[in-house]
Image (cartoon, rainbow, N blue to C red; front, side):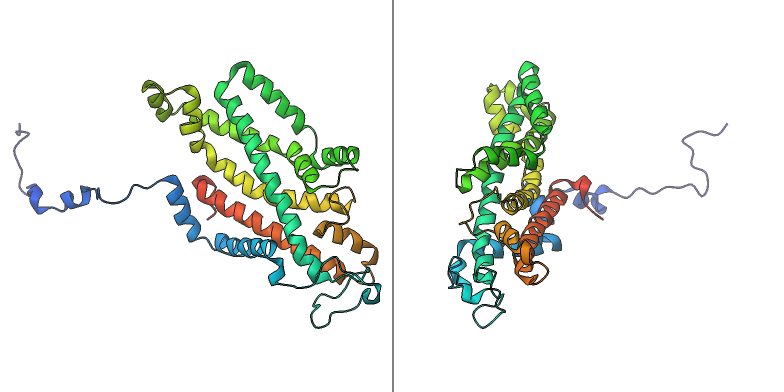
Amino acid sequence: MTDINTTLPGQERYVAPLEETPLQTVDTVDESAPAASMWSDAWRTLRRNPLFIISAILIVFIIFVALFPGVFTKTDPNYCTLDDSLEPARPGHPFGFDMQGCDVYARVVYGTRTSLSVGILSTLIVVAVGTLIGAIAGFCGGWIDAVLSRIVDIFMAIPMLLGAIVVLQMFRTVTSIWKVVLVLALFGWVSTARIARGAVLSSKNLEFNTASTALGSTPMRNLFRHILPNSLAPIIVIATTSLGSYIVSEATLSFLGIGLPSTTVSWGGDISNAQSILRTDPMVLFYPSVALAVTVLAFIMMGDAVKDALDPKSRTA
């Protein structure tokens, strides 16, 4: 019988000393490098995403137009004269005039502020209310979760646009931009609440919450200091994507004549006023429609880019 430790011819093995191998260098960790986080990884991904760069440039430009419309036109959007009714473009008025003799270009520029304000304010209220209700429901559980979830189910059964039409019809005498903002927020918070609840349910059983509780942290401190910040990624994604839908909803309500007051310059109102002359002068409707479409597209593109960055499983090839 051959000894197991006996080396046969041709089976000799050579083991190099550890100091002569690069294993120590490979296994060495650079402790001076800054710690990576989900947000830094997401920002690194976004900076390399052409979709994010294009959408960011468009959104920055749209916000600049909304904040400083006087930079782009000196014409008063409410100054109209019937002598210019449906006149074509001329120097100083590149988009021509509408049926009332108003400068279409000036109204498109100033309409940016109205539509963007409704979208941003509605999104802020929806995120605040939906995140708070969803976080409390997911964190507390029990009967609190059951009651809040049933309330969410009730509002989910009501289509946002249909509910907004009914409520706005009840308050037709109120002429304020806040009327549209609050009505859109009233029917728009439920999606954010459901996503926030699911994110909190996933985070509250993780190790960092258990460790924080063991160190003496109170439940509410855990919720707002640890759990909620770690649940913000899906909330940010839906907020970015939904902002465009609120802008479209405002334009739809103004198109139906129950949104913003007629004295307010908005893309939806101008589209509604131009529908009667669509066949004879389609460009009067074309310009505010393009402005609306580009704005909504920019926010949808931004939402897709943020989703790919914050959720690696959803990244496109």
